[in-house]
Length: 333
Ligand code: FES
Ligand SMILES: [Fe+2]
Image (cartoon, rainbow, N blue to C red; front, side, top):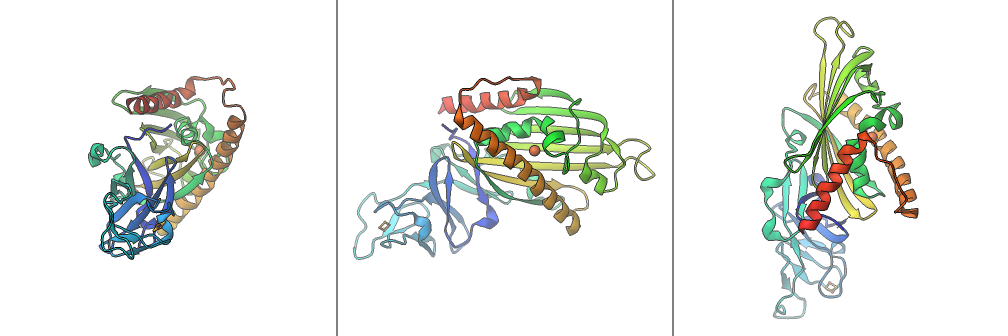
């Protein structure tokens, strides 16, 4: 069961061109393509003739033609041509989904089209703002998307799973949670911790202070703002340096036990330095691969005994509140 009345990331904008792309979203087969004008379109990926997937067809102008018997559908999903017939039978159509291109992503609305309000798309402007550098990709994960949401809201795992990549043990961090206004916000503050390896690479001294603000935006987005500050007297001479990174994470459910994990690491310093962009990309790929391996293993164990008891501790509060918000959305229909 998924919350439907919300925006999900269907694809990175650059993934979709004139060749149709088939993607499973919330258990529904969707085909994405661009019209000759470059407008991105999302249709049901099931031809209403004999249920062939439309992504095996081809784009003709603004329409997509089924690869099986050639029915053509326009961006609204209406069938506009049936080869061999002068007239298209009434009500021959497939479903079309509201799709908005914004912040280098294509955002899809899986609920009733009339309720889709682009104003409610999360503010991911750092992914395309010229004052920021961004790098990211899509990671397929064979696990319930909410396991990844929990992972991102409980960063106590960083010192364990990511010890060699982005990790530093901050299990002594203070955490405050707030779940008003339809979102969950956690502030995780650590003082005088080992500087994470990637900050050391940027010349930071061995100890630092760090604040991570995790914001869960239902149903599937977690933004993490990370501010790292050198300890006074450490690192290079002069004022302690500060590094600001915003991690954008969108986990779009594919099925109940798999998801498309879209991530982007964005920063507001050294934005023109391609080597730093590459460094962040490779580091994040390595770190999230560590998460993927653990979470897929966790999913396999959960699937064996879904009702096995678990223990909830203080650090889990964000995940608990996130699930509560999602359940509320599902109940609202
Ligand atoms: S299945 Fe698509 S045209 Fe026949
Ligand atoms: Fe992680």
